[in-house]
Length: 132
Image (tube, rainbow, N blue to C red; front, side, top):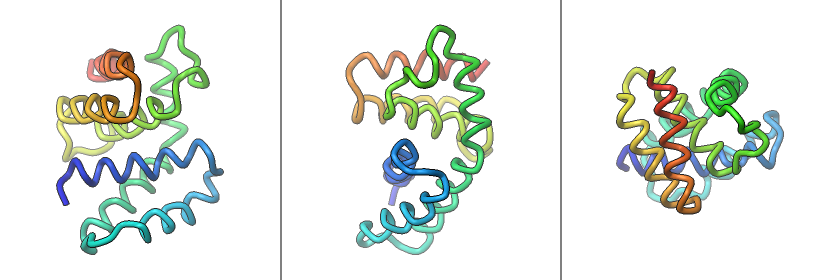
């Protein structure tokens, strides 16, 4: 599985945070992993561990989002865009393996796939603020 495919699966699981409590997310992660067919143990471990780390840091990550999204209350940000920002900010701030530019580029690609046309610019603009 490529890093992009792993990231896509992490996004799909993280999206569930908007519809479930944090306490329910272990169960949601399990359901999501059961749906992945033909995924090796290394990829499964990476997806689960990274997803759990992001969920653990979600309040800190949301604080960063709030500080860079002037004029946009976090509740006004679309659920898909918010999930993409959470994933990208985690990669930028807490994952030393992922270069900033890669995290931003991958976030924009996720926005192109899961959001409306304006979202990629919105995501890119906010993440550019994080990079500084």
